[in-house]
Image (cartoon, rainbow, N blue to C red; front, side, top):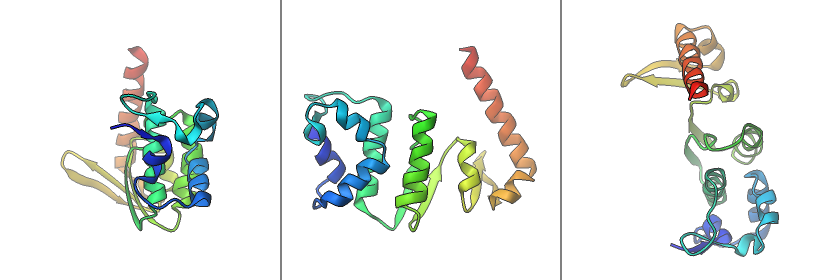
Length: 159
């Protein structure tokens, strides 16, 4: 399906120009818009331009943010983003625009956990830890998770 970038973010919701602009800013899409000749009217999809993985992730996140729901279930929205862009998304979206919403974030990025109200670690089909970040840092599960993350990073670097 082809649609403009604007249509992808609005997803049939009525347009509120101020809210749309703030969503685009928070989701770090402003620099992308400057590069696109059509800006928000740029067609994306099969017959339009192709977006990078990071751009697709930020457009999807912008669509969710613009929808203005009470509950957000986010499946690793930071995984396709550069570290500095991910940090801006955490600050401006997760801790900014969505700060008063219920947010459930599934992620492998350990650096984000220090800003979570509650941490749940799931593995081998069971909850391995549930509690505050401070409690997690002192748990044996934390040491296992950090060691596993280090092994994965080492394996990625070898490839």
